Length: 296
Image (cartoon, rainbow, N blue to C red):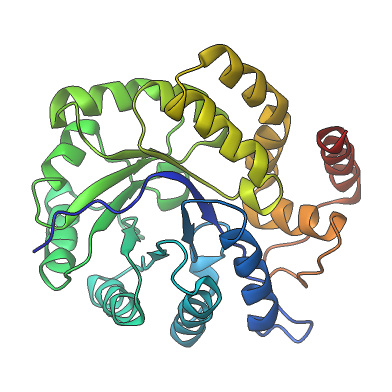
């Protein structure tokens, strides 16, 4: 099994748009994906939190992956979200993503019952043993309901093909601890938007974010300044410029804020899938003001 880590830099998460009748709007999805892939991001990630993964059925998930691969056209790697409540369904989607041409898959453990560490370990081990592409272990207790410690994540990284960690607790100390227990060269990625600068300074390989749907140039400038140039002063300046938007989209919820931002920028993405509701008008106006400042 391969231990290759194909991802670095800005990993752009795409929204899943819907038609007025509730069906996934694959045409708009391809338009948005093509736009993001051409913006300079280093990878594309469909079916994350922004992509409404838990609200899609099996057929819709597969259609999103296929449409994404067609839109990307091999320009950048694709990291596909494949998580599900059961190991069997997660493995089903991981195999589909691999056949479709995804470079890697992302797995967050999800459960109604709180899983033990042994149950989570066996979940990842079974999936990894059936794939030849890398797996990113995604830790986000706020959405998945399960928290994986740095020590346990280091154990997961001993599984062949589990080669990456996405850390989204918003605690940079966990990133430093992960480097202590898993080794200085551990491939970890930031999933907490307001923590982007601190995460890169801590050694993150990349930043998994929905922000490139709205401000790809600023996201890429941050990566260039802090990682490629090592200019922390310039990095702080460009980070502070985008921080109000990063904080807003996290607080307001990724699907609703990214959908509202795209529509304010002129791209209609349709209604959200119930029970999600659109961004309230007062918050939409606040988002409009933030975006206008970024355009100055």
